[in-house]
Length: 423
Image 1 (cartoon, rainbow, N blue to C red):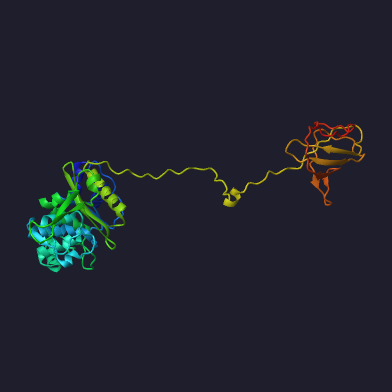
Image 2 (spheres, rainbow, N blue to C red; image 1 turned 180 degrees about the vertical axis):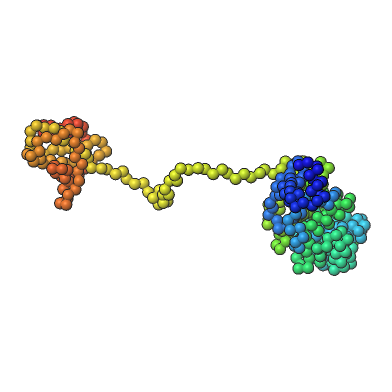
């Protein structure tokens, strides 16, 4: 297609020109969507809602129900820490009230009348996910849990989390307490700009100084806390995050990873269990870094090729396969030798080879039969009277148990008498 044709079509507005442009655009759309050298198909995850964000640019690399309002559980404490850092000095000493000391688990074990520095309580809030630490911080920064929730909602609106509403500082179940994966990513993005917050969430363990509350130099104790973020020890470049769990919210997580100068934030809500939560997080991060060429793309699952079969064997019932049928013993085939003389009535004992049934055979021949060919084989069949009949020769077969086995010559002459079996 020449440039003259292109400009003529653009100037004259020909229908054929615009149809051709539409076809080319639709054909190029899949190619334009494949960004980056490690591009792969979007991954499947078990969580109900998830977002993968590049915090430097705000680009959303993956989204599954990003604006679905769900209970965020203890990922709420990310926003709690932001509000506390905005309103309290890290060295401020806070006392534990009866309400805070009686908060539902998870707890760091604060007792009524004890005191701790704001910084220590933040470690207990973000590593151990202590609800007693959350309420102590909320009362210190907002005067009460209700007053602190108002500060939380104002901060969320300032960040741009417009689909969220918070009723408490810890995320315990409340019908009016909800957020979204997208809002949670925005909140964590803002929190990582606070140096103290970023330092706390990348810490794997810490020891908190809890004072008795009766003076600056009175008794105190140390409370060890561990970080619940499994990515810190298992995923390259993990910078920190916050977990959450309630029966209604199920497993939740928000965190950040830095690899090769590229930072990614993953926010997951309502993953079925702990195993699927961490698998979802790794799957999304691998997918994101693969788009920047910093991780191998997930392996592609190919459908197995069909196996061509000429004729399928007949199905055998399971009962039939389990039963071993006994071997079928066919009646012996009797061969009569050729003779020029009529066969006289004779009584003979015929013994078959090993593992067979010996038979007592009585052969009666009419004088009319003078010659039988060697190649002729008489197969016994039953008549109406029950006797074995083969042509004009009647064979009566009786079975009995044999204890001795002897060799039988292939040809039995009428002139010879039956011999006894050899021992």
